[in-house]
Image 1 (tube, rainbow, N blue to C red):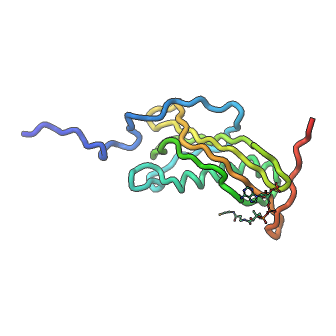
Image 2: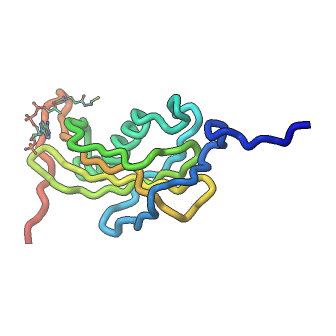
Image 3: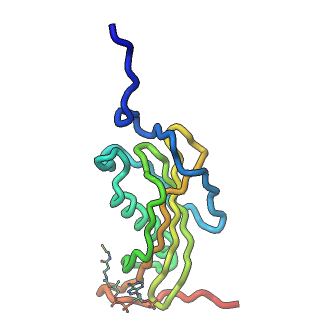
Length: 153
Ligand SMILES: CC(C)(COP(=O)(O)OP(=O)(O)OC[C@H]1O[C@@H](n2cnc3c(N)ncnc32)[C@H](O)[C@@H]1OP(=O)(O)O)[C@@H](O)C(=O)NCCC(=O)NCCS
C-alpha cells in the first residue's frame, strides 16, 4: 500500500496561497464605490483572475464618482496608469476605493485602488491593483460637454 501523497502545487484549492502580498491599510481619503467577488468563469489558465476582467471592474468602479459629478452621459477616454500589484483569486472579495484627482473642463481623472480579502482570510486586505483613469462628459451627439467646476475658496 502506498502512502497518500501531498497534492502538487497546481492541485491546491483556489485561494490557498502561502506567499502573499503584505497586508494593506485601506485609504481614508478614498470612497468605497464598489464590491464584487470574481467567479471561476473569470479565471485565466493559471487559475488566477483574468486581468481584462479586473480592468473592466476598475473601469466601472472608476466611473462612479465622475458619473455623480457629470450627471449624464460620459465615456472613458484614457487609462492613464494600471498596475497589477498582486494576483486576484477566485472567491476573493474585492473592494474598490476611488478618489477624484482632477476635474477639468470636460474631463475627470480618478484614482482607483483595489483591495482583496482572500476567501479564507476575511478582514485582512491586500492591495491588488492601482489605476488612474480619465472620463469625459459627453452630450447626446457624443461630443465633450463641460462639467461643473469645483468652487475655489
Ligand atoms: C471621449 C471623446 C468624446 C473625447 O473627444 P475628443 O475630441 O478627444 O475631445 P477633446 O480633445 O476635446 O478632449 C476632451 C477632454 O478629454 C481629455 N483627453 C483627451 N484625450 C485624453 C487622453 N489621452 N488622456 C487624458 N485626457 C484626455 C482632454 O484633455 C479634454 O479634457 P478637458 O476638457 O477637461 O481639458 C472621444 O475621444 C471618444 O468618443 N472616445 C471614445 C470613448 C469610448 O468609446 N470609450 C470607451 C472605450 S471602450
